[in-house]
Amino acid sequence: MDILTIIPPVAAIIVAVVWRNVYAALLTALFLSETLIAAFNPGMGLLGVADRNMEVFASSYNAHILVFCLLIGALIAYMRDSGGVSAMAHMLIRSGVAGSRRKAELAVAATGTVVFIETNVSLLSSGVLGRPLYDAHKLSRERLAYIIDSTSAPVSVIILLNGWGAYALSLVADYGFDRPLDVVLGSIPWNFYAILTLIGVYFTAISGKVFGPMKTADQKVSAITEAGPEPTKALYMWLPLVIMVGAALGFMAWTGNGNITDGDGARSILWAICLAIIVAAGLLFFNKVYSGSELQEKAFKGVGEMVPMVAVLWFSIALGGSLRELGTGAYIASIAAESIPAFTVPVVMFIAAALTSFMTGTSWGTYGILVPIAMPLAAALGIPPSLALAAVLGGGVFGDHCSPISDTSLIASVASGSEHLSHVRTQLPYALTTAGIACVLYLVAGLAAV
Image (cartoon, rainbow, N blue to C red; front, side, top):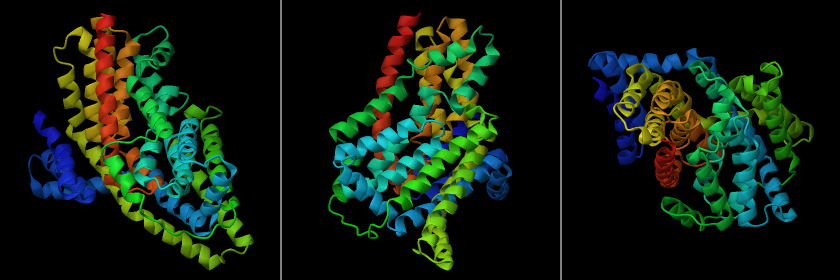
């Protein structure tokens, strides 16, 4: 049944492209996966769909992320409807910090780069900041989603002073290296995909040049003028945002017993968003912008706006769990490890990780599958372990920030206010171009290493 395990994710991609309905795509793939698990019994497969969706909430991490995504809506509604977002945009433009298209894009890219400790914090902070700036300069939300998505996971996997680095170290530590930390840190210059992705982001921000569907998206938005709330006080946006980012980092240090990289990211960001909402509501109440009942109405309105996107995230998590049980990732990995010449190990590991993460929507799950294959394979064939590790880490990032069922790409769509499939469609040509160049570089690196 091994080859059948790739049918559900392929079906999801086909349905999403043909029907342009992400809900139908995810539920179709989930039904097919559960039917295969149930030994081709469609009745049990249908029951499995219900059970698998409920199992999502058995994980506290998943529950924290889903609630976090709902509460983002309340915070955005407070900042937006109060006129705080408009005021912040006007302030940044008047001050010259974001006075031009180039400066606005660089400000957003820099925010996503600097906030590297937790990908969700990076996406939300840079996304919320970027919305009014991109609107003011007539830039598409798809372009904003690309910028913030490509400066979250790619930055995290390069800097590694975060949970990504800790996770990579825990995977590598089991293979008898004298200094496993050196193996992990040594992967940074070899992580061609992540490095090239960041170069592409800053080139786009500085040059203003886009191509493919992204260019079409920008052309469509250039003719749109959307009246927002009248500017009031920038404080209504920047203070809750600073509170959220600062609290998230503080809670991660607290839950990590002083070590921020050991902190509980999902719980920390949930606590931080709750604190930011309280601060935002307090500001608006005591400044007599809204009454208590109006604050409640605004919060529920904002949460309601997030329900469709959170449903997509929910189904995506359920599908990821189903595909892991089905063995989709393990099958792709096993194909990559069979009878390959030594010099092709880096490029094959990169492609295997890219396919696995794209089809399963998870980079960390991909690392758990492929690092145990890549490390012994590299040792047996004389490939530097840091090079093999970098190929797996970079390939995992490919799927993590452009797969339609990845939680990171979904949250990027939420944070930027972009339609999700439109974000995937416009970003994918950039990711594929970068992946193609990375493949060539991994071939050269493999030839030089053997």
